[in-house]
Picture 1: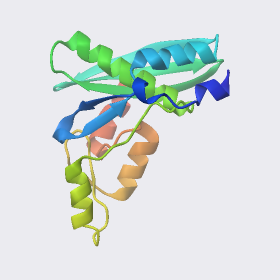
Picture 2: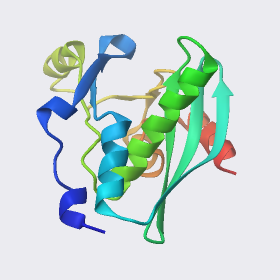
Picture 3: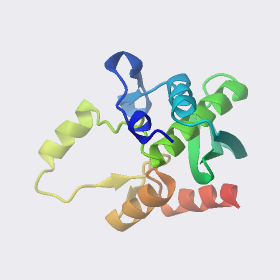
Length: 168
């Protein structure tokens, strides 16, 4: 694998943005750029969608990315705003980006909304608060850290269990 090409930052014109839940602006690299970079960096790439689940108004997929016999897996998710097929495609794209990021590709960006930034200024004396990205429930820092390390997403214990059921 050409590690230098693989870890090279994407150009500004390759990065897109969209407004998501709670009016947060998310920055992302479209999956076609990620896949092109994967194919340019290695001749031995395999992507498999291992599982999918629909929970309420969200689709979740488990993506397995293998590059030269090394495999990384990641969950991707998408809110169902139109039809389920489009949501599954978006969730798969999200999972591919996350799995590629596990290999070191810089295609995941974490952003905060203006409201979050203002709240952080207002609550600067308090400990930082963490909330589940699905149900918005407050969670302790330890649960936050575990969730980020194992699911690459902020999840409460209940939603971590649901994600684990998908994986098994």
